[in-house]
Length: 280
Image (tube, rainbow, N blue to C red; front, side, top):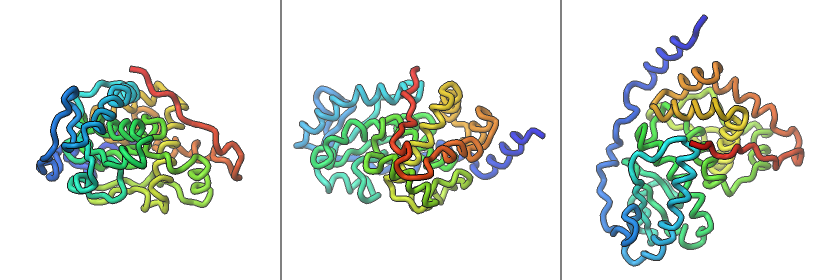
C-alpha cells in the first residue's frame, strides 16, 4: 500500500495554505536605524557604528556558509539591524534572554550582548540567524509545516554550533539517557510550537540535541539530505518531503541516531556527528 497519498491528504488538512502568509508583526515599522556608510545591508542604532562595522566584516563569511549549507543563494540581500542598547533590542524582540533574532518579514536584529560579554558569539550567532532568514525568504517566516527542532538544528549545524554553544554533546546525550528527547512524532500547529520546554529540555540542550539529530541525518547520506533541503526550500511540507526522500518517517529514520547515543557517560560522548556544510 502506498501511504504517501494518504500522508499528503492528512497533512494538507492539518497545515492549510498559510505557509507564506506574513505575520501581522511584519507591519511593525523599524525606526531609528541608519545604514552603515560602507554596507547598506547593515543598519545601526546611531552611535554604535563600530559595532556595525564588526557585523559588516563578519557578514560575507556567514552568508557564504548559509548559501553552501542550503545549496541556494539568498533571494535578496539580508537586512541586519544592529542594536547597541538593550532598550533598542527589547523594542523589537519580545522573547527574553535572546542575543539575536529574526522577526517577521525577515528582519534580523542583533543585541548589544554580541558587542559586549558575548562578542565571541557574533560570527556563529549571525550565521545561525542568517540561516533562518535565508529559509524565510523562500517559505516565509516560521510556520508549523517545518518542526522547530529541524529549524533550530539545521541553523545550528550551518553555524558550526552557533546558538548551541552553551550545551555540549555530552550534556545532550545525558538528557537523552534521562528520557528528555525531542519527540519526532509530534507535529507543530499554528498555535503550538514544540520547543525546548515541550520535551523537558533547556533551550541550549534543545538546540544541541536538534543539531546532533540534523547532523546525523546529513552525515548518513549527504545526497539525500541535499534533496530534503531543496524540497523544504521549495515549500514542501516536512513530512511529505521526508517520506519522498527517505521512504520513512522522521521518527523511524532517526531512531538510528538515538540508538547510537552512548549508554554510559564518557563512552564516545564527544564524538562529532556534524557533517561538513553541503557545497552548492
